[in-house]
Image (cartoon, rainbow, N blue to C red):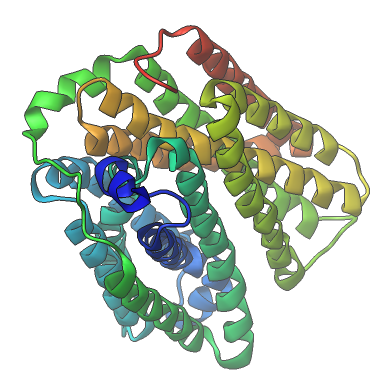
Length: 402
């Protein structure tokens, strides 16, 4: 009876398929985001290796995120016609392949080209992962499964920076890039072996769904939440690098890199928020997560270093709680409206990465003009917008349980 229920309505916790799915998507999220942000810890090494300026070295990150953002708009519609699992498997494999090319790139322009193509390859996973979970996991456990996937992305974002930095100290940036590529290959094997084939996917015409996912007020609000929460998140971390490398802290790149260890709090909060959303509803959890983020930024206004770290940890926990629940909510809402889950997820993530690029980039200007108070003000304004959008979501009529 239990197996029949899982087959008809989706996997439930305790099902073998649920365990395979959870492990595979955790590995996929880990690989994708470790690869995406790995060069951030290697920027000084790239300056020395290729003779480029510090601002040019940052292109190694922005080329990948730009390629990812653009490809997200294509990957979602493609998945509506050709399926989820094939796109996710080849996405992780392609990301690992281009990571190997990055590690052996002979010239700066070759490296940038490989990073741009790597970003394009990465898009297949985040564009459809939430849609896949919505179709394959029982609705009573969907938020929990989404939280586990987002937890994997958080661990990946942290691991990419920490592993790359540690290996670079041991043997240079090529060893670091090769180590991250090896992690990508290992995760690719896990995904190909464990990710269950889609059982509830039904091909649709992408053009039929486009208007629907751009008119729904709840989806539009969730796209806005994505842009503002990640924009503030990236701005705070970018500003923190400037602040902690300056007087009176004068921290080096290694100790500053350790700050990303607080991503562990984000991974834990994402999984916990998913469980709370299953129990109390997404409409209750998202506003609370936004308020937690505001509290975290407020704590960082204090001068002592331990309080700054605590504030970053609290803000990170709030960010991953909001992102984990909101990302899954997009897929649920689109499905309830008649389809287009892959396209809705793609637009959500496109908004996410545009917000990261635009608002995160403004942190340097805010720091130059007003120091940490300027960065905190920027983040505070963005958080306030996110809170307003989250509260509006509570008043938008529900199409189903969301």
